[in-house]
Length: 84
Image (cartoon, rainbow, N blue to C red; front, top):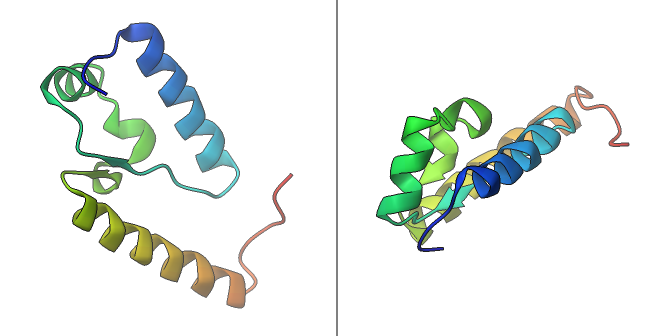
């Protein structure tokens, strides 16, 4: 996306919060200048985690693999609750 407004950012924030509540993660990748600036101003990283805002596809794929490994380890340890 090349631009976003507060309403769009709010919708993504709500999605991130819903995913987090259900034990999942939202990864963002390659935000252009305007969306990136708005996300910083709105302290958006509180909702997705700074580690989940990636600058490139390769960085996002590495992060996705890490999230998967963590999820799989928790699943094997019985730490996950079933999604609703």
